[in-house]
Image: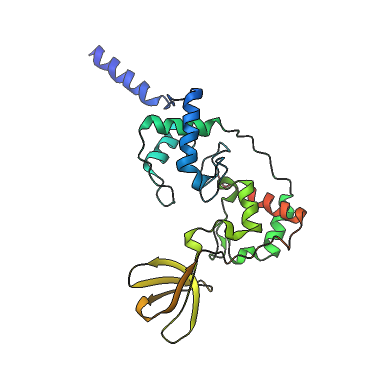
Length: 248
């Protein structure tokens, strides 16, 4: 009986111990960096500072920050996001995690003023297309957690060159319907025979492809570039505001 109690107690203690990465040597980190650059950088950026995928260099992770969380997120993927499951040997995944942990988490804060950036965001009409904290439009990406999942560089690029990285959800479809009327919007769903579209008034429509003319999808953004309309100071303010959007 005492032996059974001891075994149960030992198992209970083991279950409470945090999962530790067994692959943290300099050699493991180097191999993890190599795997990251070949398989993860297309979405997360060559330096893991974000792109289509979130910034992984900050040390703050939207779906859990423990080693166990990272292992699960990589091997099983993250439902509801573009993060797929990666079917690697576990040691190789641990090496990727070791590389991510090795990155400098002390990123330089943006130079702008958050309050001025928030006012600029409102005055420029950004809320017409973007949602923040449940308020705003749905034509553009939800920016509620922009500062948590995007690097400073990616936020700046999105403002001055929106076409540099456009998610498929925001590619623009255009065609003429069976009456000859021009139609433009975002593809919400598509199969061989039909397409469901959200127009620029955020109304949903369904069309049979056989009735459409000049159907095409362009990998461009409807957001205008602010490269020539914002000087450095207001641009820095706007980036600082977006970087401050970090809901817990």
